[in-house]
Length: 211
Length: 211
DNA sequence: ACCTGAACACCGTTCAAGT
DNA sequence: ACCTGAACACCGTTCAAGT
Image (cartoon, rainbow over all chains, first blue to last red; front, side):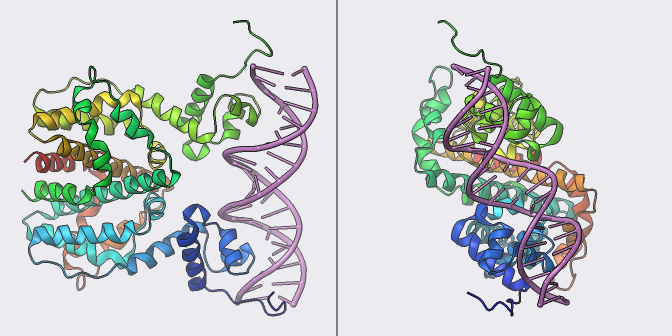
């Protein structure tokens, strides 16, 4: 029990830290204003003095994690530089699957990840692309990365359920008469599920963009 | 079989239709069991007699829309076949931005879209890929497509807010000292936002996969 | 200035009862 | 068999009041 006369002082940082603890312990769906307040031994409304609302809290959380992405040594070769920087963004974000829900909101940017964007755009420019094509190139890589994160998150959610994946069953039993190609690769889906397709996909993408 | 008891006023089909109306009129966030019930003039709990819960309702909705994707005439050339089939999946799903929330769940497949998957895999096989690489190829395309849908949805949500995009501001005012490449393409982001980058990205991806 | 309590307008879903 | 009503265990957030 806490001293009644002296309520704990809250701060933005303390709130974000509590949110992070919660999300890492129990997943995004556990991140509610009420539970964050509980975690801090405060009333739900106390949070609103320091944070505009749940949306802002999520953005603050995102930026904190982005700031923790390690700064890699990047190769000099433009193509390899783009690949390495992209993989770093993916790896950094993939550690926190709930990030997908924040990303899906759309208009977010973590200032602390700008330098990785810089590397990707610089790589494209050094590779000979025009500014317009370099900007498009970044967008395309970002799209591919978001897709990877969403799909990856989906797979791990299904794995957590413990039941055999519904999709796999449908694909593996595709009717060979109607779907000959699907039938002939039926044995491959289980393996493809386990493989990390970010790397080869990214490579194909960057090759295509820089050629 | 003799009908016993009360005649059914509701049905699965009626519930899915009401859900669809709701989602198309007011967006996904408006899709609640209670509102679907309202739409049908029934009590919330009446739905549970016909549908397991909200999750099942979303899957039923997804499959209904997938069934409506038009069957295109596909080019014979393997590469063009993959491109056309992929674009059809994207276009079909992009009409219903809320689909992203369903997709993110992970273990879903719309049986009525299997034939488009068939075309993509067949294209890769005809292009000389091994079964394993063809399966990976499909996954990569799917990832890119999901990313496109998520990003596209995010952009339209931001546009709906009416306020100037926060991300754009940050990118356009990137410090030229620290981020020279970003600064040199600063003028391009607004344009890149408006452009559809699915087409060029997909082309780069497929070129890379088939080369 | 900072925090609390009660309240509002919602959710999905369970359970028991009505027709 | 099919549907309703009340209730449970939650949400995010507003508002007025307490210290």
